[in-house]
Image 1 (cartoon, rainbow, N blue to C red):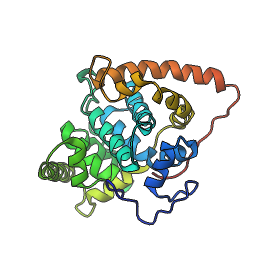
Image 2: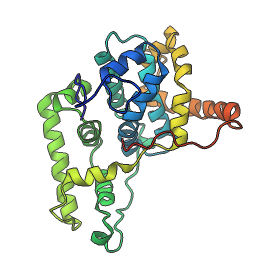
Image 3: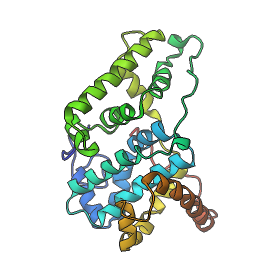
Image 4: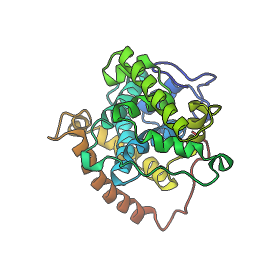
Length: 278
C-alpha cells in the first residue's frame, strides 16, 4: 500500500497504465493534464469512496464530501509546489473533513445485520462493517487511514497533527474492540480482521458519481485560478466551518449535476468507467 511520500511497489511512470508512479501522475495533474487526473482517480476512487461513506454514508452530504475531496485535489494542484505536497494536502483534507461532520449529518448506527446461516453465507464481512460503525469517530478515521488508504502511523500523525504513539494506540484499540465484538457475535477466530476488511472492499462509487467527478475536472481548473476559491478551499473564507461548507457544496452539487445532465443527458449512455477493484 501507498505510504506518505513513497511510491507504490512495482509502479512505472506511464499514466495510461494501471500501474504507475504516483508522484509522476500527480506532477502531470499539476500540469493540468486530464488523463493524469483520470488515472489517479481510477487508482484511488474506491479507497476514497470507502473512507468517506464509512463515516458519512451515501446521503447528499456524503456525496458532497466525496465530491469536495476530489475538487480539493484539483484546486490544490494549482498551488502545490511538489507532488508530495499535493498528496499530503489531499489526505489532510480527507482527515479534516471527517472531523467536521455536523451532528445532525452523522451516520446513525444501524441494527446489526446477522443473516441466517451466517457462516455458510460468508457474511462476516458485513457484520464487520456493522461493528465498525459502532467505533468512536476518531478511531474510525485512524483505522481507515491505515487499512483503507494504506498510510503508516507516522504519516497519519502528520495528517491529523497528532503524536505517532497516540495514533498507534488508537488503531490498536480499534482493532481490539472489533475483534472482541466479532468474537462476541460468533465470528470464527480463523477469520482475521485484515481478511474481513479485504472482503468488504468490493464497494465502489456508483458510475454516475465517477462520471460527474471526471466531467468536473475542467470546471475545477477554472475555479483554481480564482484567488477567492483557493482561499475557501484552504479554510480561509467565507465564514463557517468545513462542515458548513460541505453542506453548502451538497446544494451546489445538486445544481451542477442538473446542469451536467441537461448538457450531456441526451448524448451519453449509461457507462461504467472502471472495473478495477480499488
